[in-house]
Length: 514
Image (tube, rainbow, N blue to C red; front, side, top):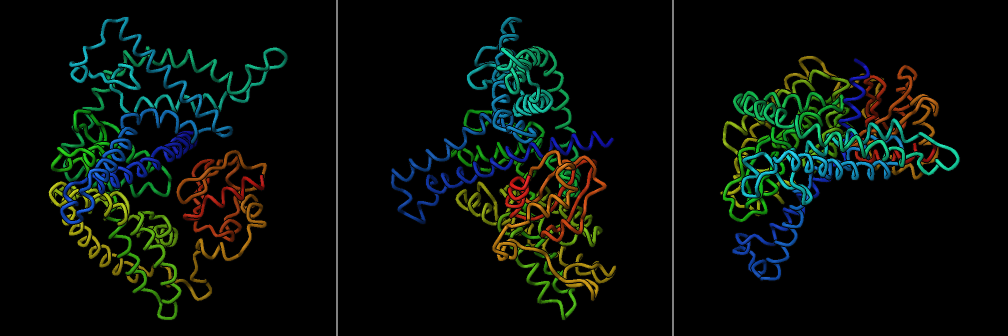
């Protein structure tokens, strides 16, 4: 069981890199849409100039091309996340594996006489990937080859030969293994994928058939798994695979909620965003729910500690509201009042359910900045963003009332309600930088993790230092918290140290010391 949890956590971590890149792509699509959108030119006449319109089209359509090659992004990105060392070589192995895989599948289909004519590819479940006709696997092709590449890279990249054979050591030996493996995988998947596709389609229909209840469960699971780091495994399939829907947008077929609405943003013939956007409506709790929860925590703080609580809660609430990074605020009450986190997960599901029931089709995955850039240029017909705000404000009221009731009712030690001998304090980026030096930081973190000999792999996601250790029992939590950690999560041999948005500096300090 422990090994299974470790494997899932490592895999979920590996998805972080590709997933983080895609919202950046979305911002460029949105920016291109601002420049090239004819509707806005009615209010800002200078946007109607042909050069600006053409620039907007260039930006948005160029960015959309990433979606058409999303499998390759995952095929290269996942090995980077999985590799324990020499991540650049791991990415190269991932690229080679993906290319060999799709060509092996193409040759297999060709030899079997199963390549469909161009005008019948979609009906036959086939598509073009990097100019090669293969079965329509979507992003699953990249996830499969990337995971296999990362696993075999970690297992065999340390193999060393001597003498004349030394040139075939390390990543070259991995390539020797991966080429025949990826060829075989292409052949095998040519036979197996149609059955897998049928199963995925059936699951998608079952989820769709569950209606509002299915959406609520999805929202609940996506939040409740945040402390374990496994939430990536919940939303990624819905955002980037057929589970999140399939749509023909401007002559191209896209799978996954996020891929669909990004493509629809750049397609002028789309008059309303697809209903599949509900699977990325996670921003309801980020922009509206959690800030209201922060207000409730402030209102219930002890009078003498309200100033200290405000100093903690306002930056965390703004981070959640503006850019959709929730962990600084969530972890401010997760460890001291886990019941509130469970309630937060339930309310997230309720908010997404309201989104579904009221027929909202606006884009709101993160914070207000993304929300404005994505929706306003589309207009209220294509993106009925005022309804999103209405749902959000409704959830703000519910969050506030529920948190305002529960905190004093169960005497929860949220910020500002600590015991008299405890300080109301969470470390912020500004406080850390004010120290003026990183001297000793890496050493202190390493000591807290049990020393050099206990550390196997060091990585990070958006807000957490992710470390694989040999013995989790020697972790010194007080020592880690003295370096600014907001919390420490242990799952199997994986340790997550929550630092916030400045986690990259912490990882670099650790790597420098090591």
